[in-house]
Structures are given as structure tokens and as C-alpha cells.
Image 1 (cartoon, rainbow, N blue to C red):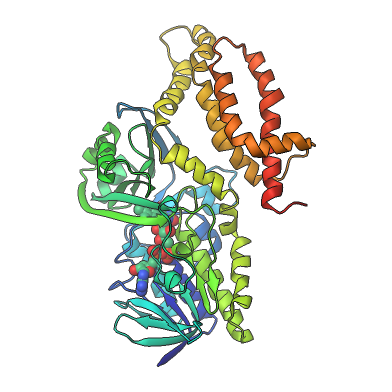
Image 2: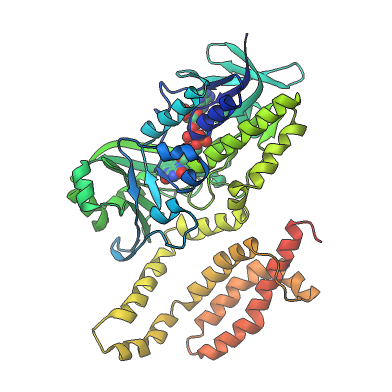
Length: 497
Ligand SMILES: Cc1cc2nc3c(=O)[nH]c(=O)nc-3n(C[C@H](O)[C@H](O)[C@H](O)COP(=O)(O)OP(=O)(O)OC[C@H]3O[C@@H](n4cnc5c(N)ncnc54)[C@H](O)[C@@H]3O)c2cc1C
């Protein structure tokens, strides 16, 4: 039986970086990939964030044939008639912390180009890569301890440490007994068309405004991400959400005039229809066992808000290989030692992303993956801009009317603020310095989620309530309740002082 120090299952970004790091540490490393070449079976947006450049110096060498740097992004807002009413663009801020973050928002690539490049880095470091090789289960001792991997053809391979980098439907996670499949409410289904177009046309029509987000009352949040010679137009939602065929929503999205224009002007032709799932967890579960660690999507590490997963797969791959090397050299690869992996990822940007995981999941469920609020969010944003800028009347007259015009949105705004935004702020902040009485804490914790939206709706629906009175009510009743809720939640989740 072939014996390795480390076997990595899967050669996506997580597996490639785990393999590269392990080989760099001098470990005998094997990477198994079911595709005929890395990236063959992988589907992504795929916008790489500047963090990849910040944390992985080799990324400075990335020069793929069809990558496109996005120096600007545009958010489009579509109303219930499938008509775009307003859009806004943004660019990197000069105050961003490091050079790449000041230069671009993402660098868009194809997985069919990125994955082979990352894999080549691992091979250069000495890792062995076996493609067209499917891992079907774990080699285990009589007592169930993981000893290696079993392949589709029955071949057994032994390893001191196995790194499961095999994506969302992770055979390693399931056969190691770390979990079953993700539940439908924690799994996203993303579908997209891949269009081809010439580089010249995309340069001319899109340039570096290469990320377009589409928020609508008629379909869940969608995107068009442009590469050098084509683009992806897709959308997604939790598996449990779809009340109609996902294709119905994708087609509705593609009917929006702005998309039609992008397709027409770039003379784009559909190249492929793609569907893929990815984890949308509020908190990852256990990611290690005796002799095993899970990385990337297999561990559920895609960011809970935007599903950015490539960077988190790379980062977790690196951490897992470092912990693996450490544990092999200490002669202890049991879970008592590999718990270091969990400690390290929790202390990294991965752990940060999940600090407000449950609150972000709610936000996604309420607002991003749910088109319904688009019925007021799109006209609200438009009415604000219209109120400020329109020339149908004198500006002063417009501005005088604006307050009452926008008043009708206040119940919705308060609802969203209380239900979706404040819980996120509460989760990422330290407890409030204000002393909160015990009964209020109790009420806030027990009834906050029930009472707050109702109070918000009641206040917001009082059309004739003067703003001062509204402010007074919010300050006196709503804010203390929110604070109480946050405070109790903080103490509850962290086990008290
Ligand atoms: C439509 C879509 C758009 C996305 N857009 C973005 C984006 O713009 N930016 C971003 O950062 N992230 C994006 N993501 C998320 C990102 O693609 C994933 O989080 C990331 O690919 C995870 O990397 P990974 O290495 O963990 O897993 P994967 O990329 O899934 O790689 C797993 C690898 O394991 C192989 N494998 C699986 N099972 C076995 C087995 N049993 N034996 C051998 N090999 C096996 C697979 O063939 C694959 O190569 C998107 C995801 C989707 C679905």
C-alpha cells in the first residue's frame, strides 16, 4: 500500500494550497482530483478578492489569459415590473489598508484557468497530483480511526493526515462521520449562464466596471461578472427557498433591459449553463477528527454574506497543512492535537466572517434571497434620488415635500433596521456600556424579536406622527429594548462573565 504523510482530497483552491504548503514543509504529499484536470468540474463567479494578494505573495505572479480586473462595481435596482429604476457604482477607496485593495475590487478569472495554475504551484513544490482519481471513502482501522483513503477502483492509500478539500458534497466529511449533507436551509443553489464575447467588445462596453449586482423585486439577488472573453450571469438562493423553477427566475433576470443591453452590445453568445451548490452556513460545524481536517467548502467556509469562497478555501488549506506538518513532526495527529486547526481558523478572517453568522443568514433570507422587499427598496432608493435631484419643480419645493413623500417607507425601514441591521451590529460589537436593568434585559431577550418589528410597524404607520414624537418613542422604548436584547444575547452566547 502506498504511504504518504499527507493526502489531500480535491484540487480546487483549498486542496491546491494545502498540497503546496504541505510539500513546502517537506512532507510526502499526494493530491487526488476526480476531474481530468483541476478546475474541469468547477463553477464559480469567479471574483478573487484583494485578500488573496495580501495573504499569498505568489498571487503577484498570477497572469491568466482571460482575467479581468474590476476597478468598479455597479449595483442595479429593479422594480416589480422588472424595470431598472436606479443604479449606483462604487470603486476602491483610497483609504483601503493595502495596495491591492486600493487598486481593485476583484480580479475575475475562470476556474478552468485558476485551478490548474494553483495546482501547478503545488506540483512545483513536490506534491504528487493524481487526476481522474475519485476518492470514495476513508480507510479506517477496526476501531474506526482514519488511516487513509480508498479510491473508486478499490486502491487503498495510507496517510498520517488526510485533508478533505473535496467541496460542498464532501465524501471525506461524510465518511469520516463529521456530518451528513448540509440541510437545505444552509445550502445555496447558484445557477448561471456563461456567455462568450470578444475581449475587444467587453473592453469597449464594460471596461473595468466588471462587477454588476442586480437587486430586484422579481428575482433573488443576481450578478453579471465579466472576464476578458466572456461573462457569467447568474443568481442563487437557499435550496429551500425556490417556489418556482430556478430557471424561471434566471430567465426573468435576463429579460431586464440593462442585461439585454450588456448582451447585445458585447455581442455575447451563451456558451454553457451551469448549476452548483455552495455552503451558506451561519456557523461551521466540527472541522477535524483524528488524522483529518476539512478545508474550504468541505468545511463550510464560504463567507456567509456573499459566498466568497476561494480566498477562505486557500487560507484554510494553508492553515490545515501547517497544523498537519506540526502534528506529524510532534508524532501526534490525533484530534487532541488537530484542535489547533480549529483554534487557528477561528482566530483568522474565517472566524471573523462567522462572528455574526446567524444574523447575516437572517439578513440574506429576509432581503437578498427574497425578492419581496425589492417592491419597496427599489422605489425607496429611487424616490430619495428623485426627491433630491428632479427638476419637475423648484428644488426647495421638492425638498420641502420630500419628508412626507418618504414617510410611507418608514415602517419598512424601521422593520429592516430592527430585524436585520441592528442584530448584525449587536453581534459584532462589544456589549453596550450602558447599564441595563435586569427586567429590561429579560424582556429584551425573551420578546425582542417579537416586539421590535411590531413596535416599528406601529410607529411607522402613524402617518401624522411628527418626527420629534417618533424620535422620542424610538429613544424611550425601542432603543433600550434593542440594547437589552443585544446585551443579553452577548452574555448568553459567551456563557456570561
Ligand atoms: C456559481 C458560484 C459562484 C461563485 N462565485 C465566487 C466568487 O466570485 N468568488 C469567490 O471567491 N467564490 C465564489 N464562489 C465560491 C467558491 O467557488 C467556492 O467557495 C470555492 O471553490 C471552494 O473551494 P474548495 O477548494 O473548497 O472547493 P471546490 O472548488 O469545490 O473544489 C473541490 C475539488 O474537489 C474535487 N473533488 C470533489 N470530490 C472529490 C472526490 N471524492 N475525489 C477526488 N476529488 C474530488 C472537485 O472536482 C474539485 O476540484 C462561487 C460559487 C458558486 C457555486
